[in-house]
Image (tube, rainbow, N blue to C red; front, side, top):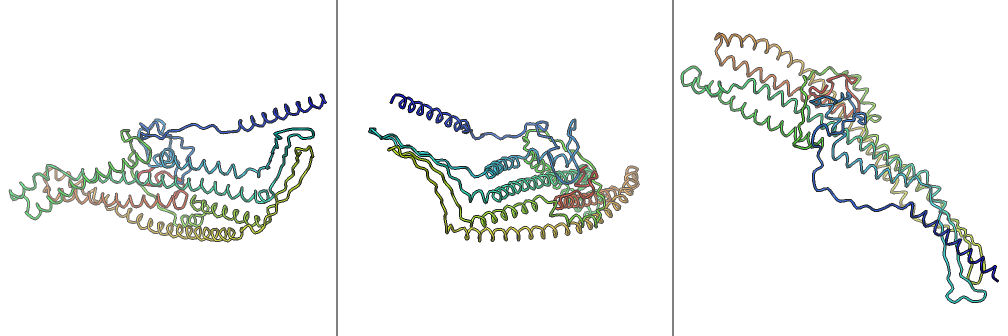
Amino acid sequence: MRSTFIARQAGRVGARWWAAVCLAQLLSGCAVYHSQTLPTQPDWAGQTRALNSDFSKVVLPGPAPASTAGGKAFSGVQLASLAVLNNPDLRALRASKRVTQAQAVVAGMLPPLQASASMDRVDHPGPGVSNGHAYGLSYSSGALLTHKDRKNAEQHHVDQIALALLWQEWQVAQKARLLYSQWQADTEKLTFLQQAYDPHYCSNIKTAANDGDMAPATADAEQADCADSETRIVSIKSDLQSEKAQLYALLGLSPDADLALSRQPFSPSALNHDQALQAVKKIAQQRPDLLALKKGYESQDATLRADILSQVPNITVGLSRSVDTGGVKSTGISLDLPFFTGIKKKIAVDRATRDALRNEYQARIDQADMEARSLIEKRALLFSEFKKMQQRKAGLAALFNKEKQAASQGDIDPVSYFQLRKTLRDVGLNITEVGLNLAKVDISLTTILGMPLHDGKANSVGVGES
């Protein structure tokens, strides 16, 4: 009797020990809660050197940016990469991407083995009566059967999110380069306006008309032009401030920080028409948004396959072992074989969703192809116009230099001189506007095609973006 009692006690101690070990294992894998307060202040970078400038982490079409080390002014290409690395909205999207990656890890795990245990405690033990217990293991074959396709579906979804994020990065980069090109063009326009505007001349127009040195009609036209120039100068200065503010927000930079932008001449090169059309045919392999749609389609296709496999009855096999309060031991085997799960409705939805994604993918390819071809033709027209205007400007500039020397010697009347100066101003403004439109087309084409237009040569994208 005593030996039996000791054995029972040892068994209880052993069971408690194993229970403690299992509990410790469970607790060691548990996550710990930490509170996190919401921010109450803007999280801007205080100065440009505080911005992340590791360009090796940036994947963008077009020319690679030069290092910012030791540089005081940023080019358009550098701004694009800085915006991708530091944009607040992109930082939030990257955090969401990590959530999706965590979900993929969970989906990649094998279906768990289910364990169960129970105990029947006897309140009034007596001879031949003891506490009962039972334990068992079970496993579902259905989850194992669809595991590969479920895992693939989740991985395709993760790839889709990553590619969609990359496309958002390209959009931010494009916006930064467009803002830079607009700023560069407005800076050039302001220069042309200020060079042609002479406050002394404008203030003396009325006096010259009263003295008979200028016809009344000419005086009225000159005064109107002076007033227009003053208005345009104020307007462009306001636009420059707005463009800088938008760049600050895009970079996550404090409004109090200094942001110097480089000024470089825009000299576009001719686009190889056949090469550009060849690039159009590769859009589906280059564009992150189209690749993301493709991954979304593949994810849905894998989900459909998994649901079709789910039509196979989900067989759950269980093995149990029990001892009742009378000391009777038993072993059991269970088989769970469900029917009529309603999976056919979900399969129909899966098929319809896959068809919708396929149609969306085709529509986006058609749209991208049409946009690219339209921009290629538009660029050819703008480039031809730009070259013609450059030639006209060169001729006017040579004539202006001669007239300027004549005006300084009093050989030409001031009105004729200022008329020529205004003509040169207007040609400069027009060529800058055409150059800006050409830069916008280049930037848009680079993004739409997903590749540089001029083999990555300097100054290939944007107004002075080398």
